[in-house]
Length: 357
Image (cartoon, rainbow, N blue to C red; front, side):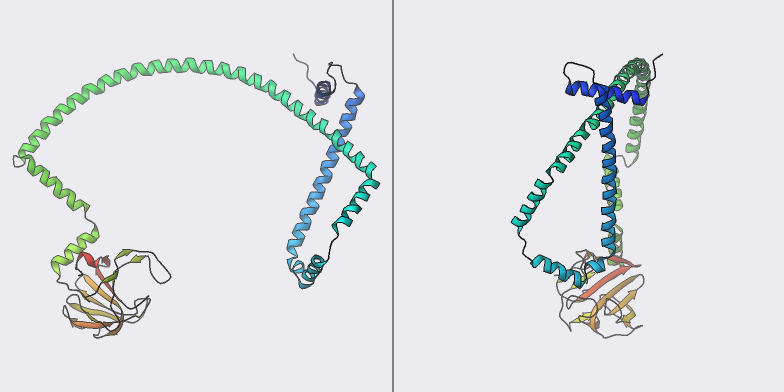
């Protein structure tokens, strides 16, 4: 059984080891008087730390009080006093001379404080040495136990790997046999299917191509083809497109997702109906300004930012009939016609249906 050592006895031994290494090269045991002196210095360092902590707390309290009374700090009287202080001339040579005189008069006190400060260092180094010695002992023990565990784990891993290799070889042989049987059966079935469709491989490839093309179409493309097949449409105004359908760079006026197209026409240009239908809405409310909607079954066309509407709600209109005059009403950056095409409230790019010159 090992003899248990008290914490005080460990500290005393560590102090003796430290002084023996640092101050006495002949490994002579330090006297107890010097050891007691080191303990007193360590107690003084604790008091010093406590005083520093108190000063830090007072400093933090002052900062919070100053932050709380910001109205007083930045008042006119305080600002005027700071300006007066900054405007005063400061003689740094005179101040440095006074500081030097003060140091010469109190030189003995400063020397005493410096000695106390230097005596504090051995106690800190002693604690570090004790910790290092304990860490070295623990590290040696941990290394020995780790080596033993590694040896056991390596033996177990080797046994398990050998068992896995044997089982994997058996499984691979079984899988190869089953795959060979399946591939032969698939080849026979595919050859029979190909010969059964018209007796040629070209028909099979044609069916695959048609299936892929239909699956790749978007909803907008499907809607555009439906409108072109079932409705006859014309251009509402013959002019260039200044802002196409889709996403664009947003601003305070311009939206990110443009649901129609902008046709660059001056104010007063004649707007015609793009298709046959019924006028469902005539309004001057909202971002579209003065606008109207024409509906035919499940397809709707919208004409926005007009200056004048020439038809009324409920009127039946024909393709190419005059319905409005272009303008600059609503949320716009300049005169133009905003034109939309919708199928069941889904917007469709007008350029997929109509062609602009």
